[in-house]
Amino acid sequence: KRGQRTDEHLAVMKALWTLDHPSFAGELYHFSDVTFWPKPLQRPHPPILIGGGWGPRVLAAVVRHADGWMPVSARSSIEDRVARLRSMRLTGG
Image 1 (cartoon, rainbow, N blue to C red):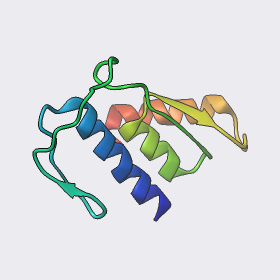
Image 2 (cartoon, rainbow, N blue to C red; image 1 turned 45 degrees about the vertical axis):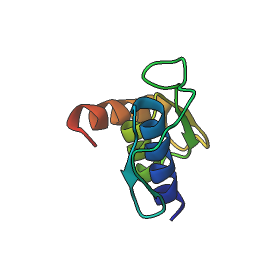
Image 3 (cartoon, helix red, strand yellow; image 1 turned 60 degrees about the horizontal axis):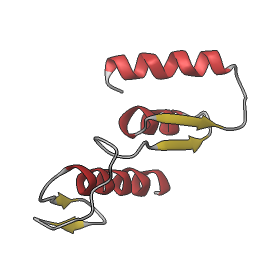
């Protein structure tokens, strides 16, 4: 469940960074109307980079949450994976 936990962690961080009175209800974390300060200077939030392999789960997480990807273990061409990421981003996943 590592990927699922990472997805929730990133969603929590984004809520805390971007909402005035964040609330969140997930499998691991539940909070409502909390105060989180100081907010990051970067808007809407600091850049999020996801490092990982080439699998569909990693690529989906990059599309959903990240501002950048740091790929490892080149099993196919980077051009193929970047094209796949672009396609996933355009189609929403």
